[in-house]
Structures are given as structure tokens and as C-alpha cells.
Image (cartoon, rainbow, N blue to C red; front, side, top):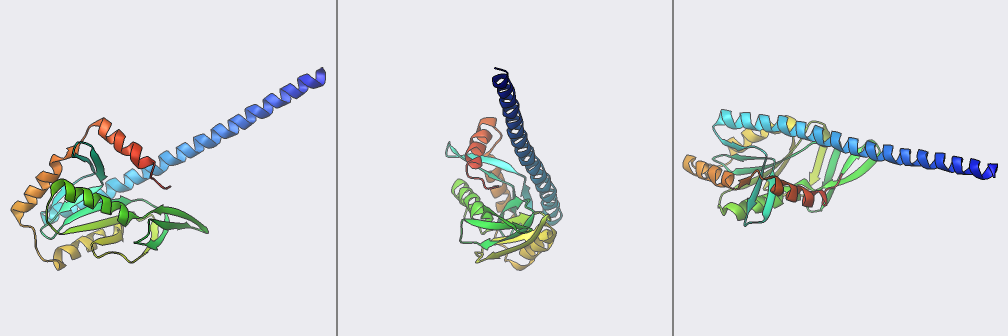
Amino acid sequence: MIGYIIGMILGSIILIISFGFGFHRLYDLRTKSKLIKRIGMKAEKIISKDIKEWARLTKNKFIDSSFYKYNNNKIFEVDSILITDKALIIIEIKSVKGIINGDATRETWTKIIGNKTFPILNSIKQNDINLAHINEMSKMDVPTISLIIYSNTTDYIDILKKPQHAIVIKHNNLFETLDKIDSQLPSRINFENKKIIYNEIKYYRTKKIKDKKKYKSFYNTKRLY
């Protein structure tokens, strides 16, 4: 009888320890996920601030991170948009540590940290979806550039077979890249059309909580960490 009671006590202790370990691991994973999200949001704000400043200095139009809704149920998010006299620039901002390499034609790329590798989404294809939404939503026939900006926490980026409309850079190359676009491409959008495009895109912005929740619910099922 005593042995049975001792066995019950030991079993309960093991069960409590196992539960505590599992809960602690789940807590750690959730905490890490929240930390990564906060770091990403901080990087996005810093980079967006620089883009906004460049737009102010060059007298171009800037739209900050926004959700958009059109055709009643199509919802998407864009980190930043620049409307210059050269092109409509759709911007995707990433905060990723390590080395990024891959092929622009494939669905995933590779993140390397030390001797470990992790799959990440192809940012060019990801932003191409935003480009397609913008074109379908606004029906504007203007030159469009996909600009993907990785924060300076990324060590190095090596992407093969990049399409002509896509540019992948680190934050420290931002101003140089935007200046090149501004100086080397021919002017295609006059001042009045810049205002029209700006107002047209802003018209479709949504701030409704239910729209954001709907988008995030779908996006989180597709996300790679």
C-alpha cells in the first residue's frame, strides 16, 4: 500500500514537471515570436521614416504602411509606396538576420545563420502579389518597380535570376538606390498624374479591425519563420 502511494506521488511529480516544461517551452516560443515581431516592426518604422524623408526632399509622394480593400473582399497590405515621376514603387520591408540566398523563380529562399539553414518566403514573389493587387485595384498603366529592403541585420543577400522590375537591397543602400532610379529612368508620370495616383491608392485604404484580422488570419497560415 505504501509503495502504491509513493508511486502515485512520484507519478504526479513527474507529470507536473513535464507539464511545467511543456508550458515553459510554449511560453518561450510565444515570447520569441513576439520579440521577432517587435524587432521587425521597429526596423519597418526606421526604414519607412527614411523613405518618407527621401520623398519629402525630392518632392515625391509617399504612402506609409497600409491595408487595402477592393472588390468587396480582396484585402492586402503594403509596407510603403512611393509615387515618383519615374515609376510607382511598391516596397516590401524585411528584418531578417543572417545570409539570404536563393533563386527569384523559386517559392522559397534560404536564410543561413552560422551552420543552420532555414526556409523563408521569396520576397520578390511576395511583393509581386502586392503589385498585382495595386494594378487590379487602380487599373493604372504606369511603370512599376518592386523594391525589397532588408534591414541592416541581414549580413548579405545573393538572389539569382532577379526579374527586371525587382530590386533587392539592404537598408544602407536605400538612398543610393532611390537616387539612381530618380536620375537614370525617364520621366513617365507628370505632377498632376502623381496626385491622381496618390489619391486613387489612398481611396482604397481600410482601417477596419475586421479587415485587418481577416488578412492576418489568412497570412499567418502561409508564413514561414
